[in-house]
Image (spheres, one colour):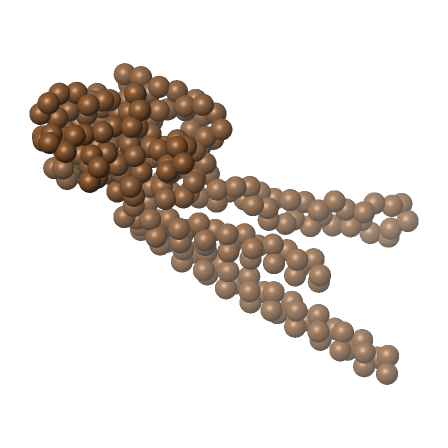
Length: 248
């Protein structure tokens, strides 16, 4: 009976984890360049006690173990905006941005703008990094646009080229929050296979209908497990009460 309760609780914890992941995906449906996550579970079989004196061999007990939340790196829907500073990467590359402390991060969100100091930044205010450092535009320059190869142009010429990065194993990318990624492994130049499409933005790759269906399934499974745990606990209390009555 104790095993039934423990197995039920392990399943509830796994379902709660899956519900949190789904909720985060749904919350970022409208986040540019967001990559959805899923949950991976595995079976953990509890070791059994063995002895020749046992009349019956113990049965194996299986628990649920959280094995991580793999990221879906597929490309989201590309939507045309007409804004010359909006850009989307075609391929497995990432834009490079710089935090306030100078550290480098990576993103697929290409919704760029020029701030009051003439710096090209993300909508979150992070500086966009080019191959020769952060990209800056003088306040008297006009006609800012991004070419297909990532070169930032104005009416006065070339102002740098977006630094596009790729990774030997994209699965090693870690979420840093605010739609940013970091990696322990060094980034590599994206090369000519990566192409920048301008006047468009990559939306989230979350599939709303699929996520809502998963959420309903998880809620139903959680309710079912909760009911089972409650009934099991009630049986245990009833058994203890009956044993107490027999002893009296």
